[in-house]
Length: 246
Image 1 (cartoon, rainbow, N blue to C red):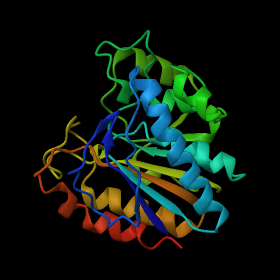
Image 2: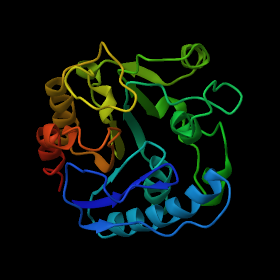
Image 3: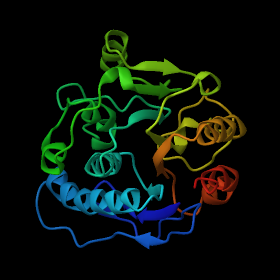
Image 4: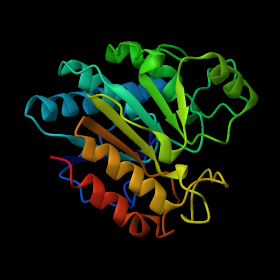
């Protein structure tokens, strides 16, 4: 396992991002001027190269960042290394918005829809990211959905599951964990808390089961919490399960 830190939230550098895992490498380039997706494409190009290098060397990259959009670079890197992954996506939210459906304009609500070939294509096209078939995606415990997201998911082939019913997913797997999948009562300081979710112990148990199955090719851990909240320390158990990756 190699821990790669991406201390960014979207295109904003967060040099003081508090991480639950000690990084082996940090990627923090100076981003050029431009629109956010153009800037993020530059960042994710470096992420994709780093992930591809680790996978070709037989290591499992664990990419720790401040958002979910970094997943575009991780999946692109897996594809460059010859691994077309299935996606298991833990998140309290759907992350399946498009520029046409979002009410807030928040770009962190787009990445899962981008991975399956829709939504804004700026970064995916620049990365050469091939769409992941919807039927190869499991969305775990997304409960805070805007109406357009709920409508899309009702008609898509993305499978939805609670944390204790993910089941077996054949590898290679990209395991994505936005920590806000956890009930906000268990993890303080979340940027976008989604009450009514599973306990942190339940999330940790589910991640343990997926890791133990042996098909995980890469991990994305989205640390979507405020500085000084102590969430990084509370995530020590989850971090330990990821540290078991070979």
